[in-house]
Image (cartoon, rainbow, N blue to C red; front, side, top):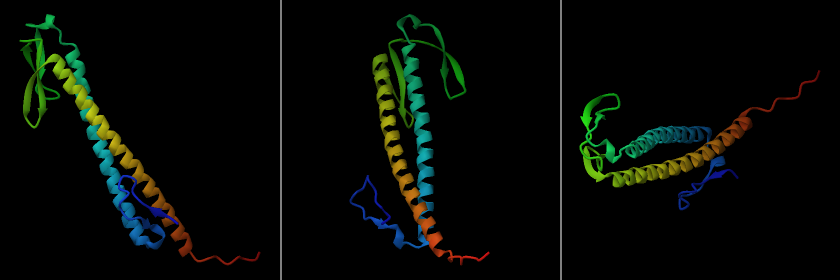
Amino acid sequence: MATISSKENPQLQQIDLTKLNLQQLTQLKQQLDQELTMFQESLQTLKMAQSKFQDSGESLEKIVPELEGKPILVPLTGSMYVPGVIADANKAIVDIGTGYYAQKDIEGAKDYFKRKVKFVTEQMEKIQAMGIEKSRIRDTILEVMELKLQQQQPKAAPTKA
């Protein structure tokens, strides 16, 4: 029997795919395709965020006390920089989201970015696991659809040569 159920939500009801008609199977497949696309987009967004947090943490590694008073280019956007001077090489201003900034010591800022990278990585792993499960379900639906299509085709009578 071809049934599907969700591993992450075992309390959900199982569906016997063989009892669904082709239209219902097609709708279910389309819904899964949309969810898989959304998962891929989410993974791409999280990968970009992960990369930015890693880059920020790596940039902090280069800040040493000897740089105090030295000129630096300060990024305003991804492609626009303004000249500045390192006023205090022991502190950094960290963008903590939605327009809020916090001043942290260098070690605290490094720790912040490490925690953010870890959190984003964990979220990516969760989304990947859900995507694998949805892909498995989609593959099962495709198999049942193929079987139903084969059953609908009339049996060809053997021809005599």
